[in-house]
Image 1 (tube, rainbow over the protein chains, first blue to last red):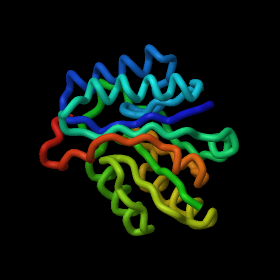
Image 2 (image 1 turned 120 degrees about the vertical axis):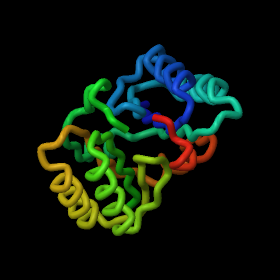
Image 3 (image 1 turned 90 degrees about the vertical axis):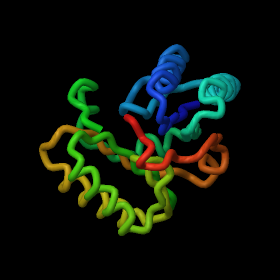
Length: 89
Length: 89
């Protein structure tokens, strides 16, 4: 089942580790801090446990949301993710 | 119907205007660049047109996704949005 995982995390090192975990689970990066892909419910739970453990008690927010196919197909999108080295904020 | 709107935009001024538009349409900020709320399909389309017009040809990505109640209720969340003035990235 498709899921969307997004986060807002202050600590650069933790943010990078969480991005790596999402990529390790086969998710695609759709924005700098937003990933999506198809994972079984079990793997979604496993990934969520992993990324929340990485966050620990540091400041930040992580959300993992299942997305049904109908909703995903109805999304509206514009533009491309800015190149990381062009980001100013 | 509930929707999720998220963006990754380089230009600070445009990013702030898009956040204001989301708040004007009654969405709640769940992360620094992620908003959610209930809007009719027509208002979702209107908001998407507005925010893509604000982005214009500047670098960035905006996605608006409808979210069914079942998926929204199945989300997993941890933590709080960091205070804006504590963000380092």
